[in-house]
Structure formats: C-alpha cells, structure tokens
Image 1 (cartoon, rainbow, N blue to C red):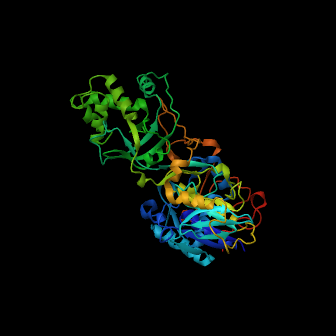
Image 2: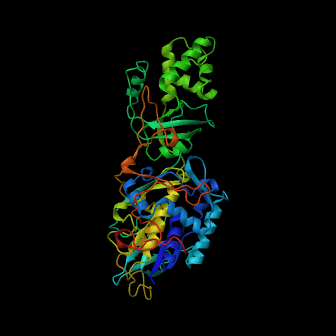
Image 3: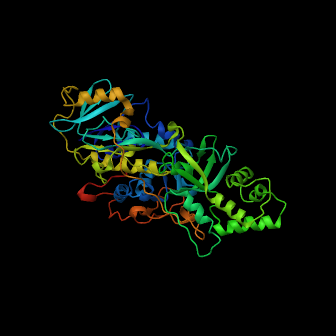
Length: 521
C-alpha cells in the first residue's frame, strides 16, 4: 500500500488523512504542535463554523480553481462526510453551519476518532522542514531534528503562511498577508463611537469626490450615479483604532492602506427616501437640532457624528432642504481612510501561499511533481467569513487525500538508509527554513498578481447599495455557481446542482478516470 505523509494536523490535514487512509494508504500525519486541531478549536468563537449553506466559488479569491474542486466534490458531499463521522450539524443565520453541540471540540473529537478508526498514525511535536523528490521515486521528508524519512506521496497541509522552503523551489509562491481582520482607520469621524455596533454596507470608492458631486443631484429624478466595486453588508463595530465586525473582516480581503472605506449607515433606504425623511422631520419639528432629527434614524452618537462629518452644527436645527441632502449623503458615504489592518495575530485567514496554477484542481497534485500534493491554506485560496474557509479546507483535504492514496508506490521509498545530505538541495532548504522559519514567505515570495474578485453593487438615486442573500443581488463573479451545503443539517434541503458530472461521492471513476472519493467507511 502507498505510504503517505501529511504535513500539518489542521482541518485540511485531518480531512486528507481520513480520506487517504479510507482509500487504503498507510498514513502518517506530522504536526509541529503538541496536539492536532488546536486552531480548529478557536474557529467560530469556539463553536466551529463548519461550512455554509450558500457556498459559491465566487466567494473566494480564485473562483475558477475553487469551482473545479467543488465540481469534483460538491458541498453536499462534504457535509455527508461529517454526517458519516457522526457530527450532527444545523444551520443558523446567513447559512452558517455549526455542530449541533455548538462546540468546536465536537468536530475535532470526531475527526480524531475518524483518523483512529481509519488507522492514521499521528506524530505530534514533529516539525517538517522540507520535502524533496528521491531519484528512485517517492519523496524525502526532512524534519527539524535533521532526520529524513521516505514516502510514496506527501500532502502539504501546513496551514497559513507556509515556509517557502518547504516545497521544491520551482513551485510558484505568492507572498502571504493576513486577511479577515479589522481595519485601522483615521478616527476623525469616529472618536466618540467606540463600542457601538451598526448594520451597514461597507464599500470602497476610488473617486469619492465624484460620488459626492453625484449625490448633490439626487433630487433630480433623471439622474442616476452608479458604484461598481467590492462591498460587504453586515455588522460593523466601531473601535478606538478603527472598525471591526464581520462585514469589515470580509472587506479586509480587498482594501489596501491609503484607500477610503465608506459606510452606508442606512442601507435599506433609498437615497431620496433618506432626504425626504430628514427634511420632513425637520419641518414637523422645527425646534429639534440636526443631531436629534438624525437620532430618529441612527444611534444618537452615530447620528451626531454624521452631522459633524457633514460640516453642520449638531446642536442647531436643519433650516434648508440642501442640508437634508448633505446629511442623507453623509449617512450613505460616511468615510474613513484606511491605515492598515488591525492586529495580524487576530486575522482568521492568511492570503498567499503556493500558487494554484501549479496544482490540479481535482486531485491537488502538483503538476510538475508526481506524488506531491497541497491543500487548505497552504494554497493561495481564501474566502469570506461564514464557514467558507473551513469548507475549502475540507474540500481540498478530502480530494488531496483520496488522490494521494493512489500514488504510485516507489521502490525504496521507505526511508531506509536515507540521510539529509543524500538528497540534492535538501540540506540547504532545511537550513533556510531553520533560519527564516515561517517568515521566509515574506522575504522570498513574490506578491501574487491575482486580485480578489469583487461583487458588483449599484449605488444611485434609485438603486442604493445591495447586499447578499435576501438583501439584494450579489453578482455571479467569474461564473461562480451557488450550491447548497445543507446535507447533514436538521433543516435538510438539497443544494442546487453544481454540474459535477457525477463525480461527487460513491464508487467508480471520477474526473479524468481517477477513482472517486470514498466518503463512507
């Protein structure tokens, strides 16, 4: 049977281990920490947001590659894998799927149980520094203690910010950066708002002056301004240093320091309706100050901040309709300059890693190196908040594990008599990895050229900004298809077809004649 090494005991690594072992491989999982799945325990605030019932490939930075993987293993098949493990799941707001126990430990416990039942051997506190192909076939895996073992196949499931020196140097690498994190901003407009939460639409605009000029014509029924670019909708939390919250985390995937982010604080109102409400209330209550009128729409401190940002006196009445237009405009374009991300240690995901162009989207095998696989965050794939990144970990891990189990067995790949100096270039890469550690990716990697694909929204006198799901159209980026992932959930329901050509689960042949993934025992 093929002997498979899995580097990393996170979500994708454990999924790969189970899939490979169930396909008949001898599987060894190596984890540098003292136990597997530590990061998994912190996901979803300790509840483990396993997946989402509304998975779309366009919710990732590389939709075409993700779509190919989801064609090979549809979302409902991923959830069937967890149902087989014994994890009962349920669906919450915005399609988020959690274990019924509401404990991330449940998911980890069942994954570990699945590994044990499948015969996976765990090696904790065993750090892999580099891998290299053997002349006689198979792969040499070099460890931090300078020992070397041979395997027929290797799966890199190391997680975010992998060492550039881990895999052969001819595999393209994109520099890593943290995403899904709060944004540090200029605090001029939000000094008094720390701790306040609002539901808003957050968006970018490259030319805010044009946007503001267009708003001044909002009273013209023939005029319509448009906005097309990245936007998110949901909770925003004001902080002393900037803004946080799920919508901000998602926007952090697009924004760069120096850009302006804008909040539409009344995303469900049409622009003209905002103007009419503010002016009508001012006329009906002429003694009310501008801050008091706006407090009928927004939390009082936010209302006051909007008035000040509009250049008006919050303690004086609104005396002209043009002032109502200005306040309505500012409520939809409450802007802050981005200075950078908040604490990188708080980021949920790392963008960057080994380039997807170098790997097959159905098997996750390296195109240039037979028997070498990568999955999860080790690849340059990241998605939005809400279970998307864990779903990618499961999908890529299961596919990589099943394919690795069918790698060609190499004579002499057992590792007998191997030394670090025997494999060309391996000693040097181990040395580089030892010196630079996980920061090697920042110094050596080139910045990936791909840009995240932004959803398109409309902003104008009649359209307003539209969000996700029931709140408006999101835009089908790069042909991404929507599919349910509700299997294994008490709510049930079948996801829309993803055009998988019958390559989801079960037995027989999958894409390109490869064996299908065995999701069950």
